[in-house]
Image (cartoon, rainbow, N blue to C red; front, side, top):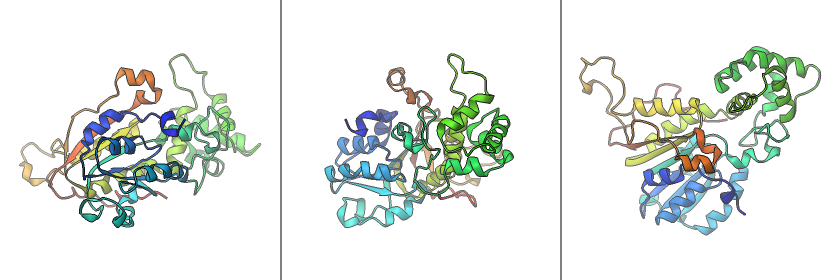
Length: 335
């Protein structure tokens, strides 16, 4: 059984239908994971897919797909906020890309958050359900979650848990972590989960695990996921050709808020400072929303895949207008 069969890409049908894959076109799978979106696009049309992932394990998993779809599929290791630079490094003579260079895309898909394969591997340290090293690094480089837990003071820890996990008990949990690490280093997921459980009410039926928000917060902080998303959206805006489609699947409110704000600001539905100011005073919309509300997975998909329950898909089509005009500091590459 392959990772692709173990991992079910959320809203796969809806994403592929939104991108409308066509022969000769070039698409971006910004978050390869186990390759569900990439494979679906490649099997739907005689197109080219460029996929990006910062996890070296995902790059190794995707090697067979590069052989299977030789000339039409290429997998690149790196951060998707760096997509413009990564695309420029591709050996274009090997791939069937529009105009011989991947400087413009016909569509792009983002599947945000953590891959289920990463969650299921205790040695990666993403989940509290199986004991493993407190790591959480998608790229396997840089500071780990254990480094953050051991080196941050209580105030900084509380800020991380609140801002990236929306954890209401952030201060209580942060104090417990600082107290516990005075007795012994916190190096495993089980240790951290037990510390959180010690100061949180027991889980009631229908509630999420008390450790969920704290683990989410640390993972997002360690991988700079929100900065990466902001940078990736701004980057893909300049790479999509007129008519190109952007499809983004998010799994929690922090991600969806960024995606919604980005697309709302850049669409014809953007709020204007005054109804008395003519439309022409603002930048021309660079995206056209394909649906005003986020697309949710079907009840059947939610029954078959618990990960889909919180998913939201937002779709927009690139217009002929110039890039909307990113503000200073908006594009932030991951570390």
